Image (cartoon, rainbow, N blue to C red):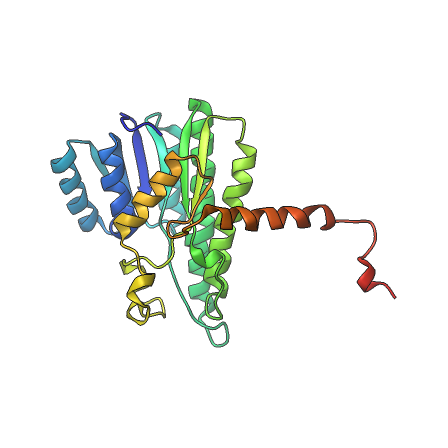
Length: 264
């Protein structure tokens, strides 16, 4: 993605945390912004700060992405607004708790936000970007897509979906001018943890990254052409080895007879 760009970036979950950091960084790179979240007051404050600091145009679009009608409005914007060149799918929720005795409705809401909304927004963005000939989609997954915990069954499941969904879309769009990136941050010092069921203070400081550092790393990975960026991973060959191991499995995942160890 070029350092100077007069097009627009639409960022979900843009009122705080990673979303706010993306807003600052993408404005610094020359993008106008559309901020999407539920908290209008916080977005207006962020928008004023970004406008004053960078001079870029910043629009606030209040939407609850778990509400069908409000989600549809954001989808329409992604399909039809020719200025939108970047989508950052950052909106998401967290809930860490054992399934036994858990609130199934809360899990359903988590799946709606982390999976359904992201899928619909990505689909709308691909439609618009395909017509316009180019674009960039950034889908925020999580390190917990790989590091699965006893209390993260639903959360890890949703973030694993984001990763595999993004990887499949990368294959689909490989011959196009649309770039798709998955970002897998670890623990980031944001409000994400409030009410999640895990106290961020229980983690060692060396586990916790700032939102600015996480976004800077994610954008560096995007610039480098990484399809998957794990901001804290020291050696990218570790990820490449995991993907290579998965590739070794593929030829044997569907065969005409069961493996020998399952045959009498």
